[in-house]
Length: 69
Image 1 (tube, rainbow, N blue to C red):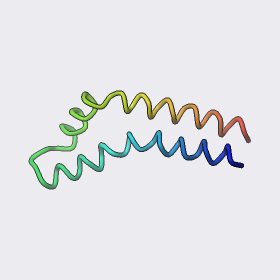
Image 2: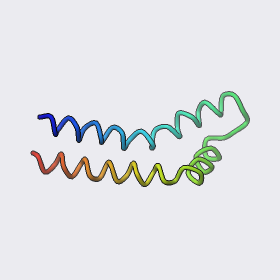
Image 3: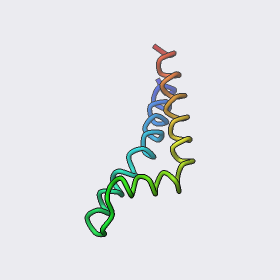
């Protein structure tokens, strides 16, 4: 039970880097003259390692959760 909770937390941590750019993009659109695609492109060039770490965490946690069932 405890291991399943840990893998769910890691899944959530892996999803966070994919959600944050959209939240920050909408925020930047409201206070500056950015467009969402401009913000997402800039964010992906600067913070591309976070996407890789997030996708690795998502893949590992989904594999472990599916294996537990």
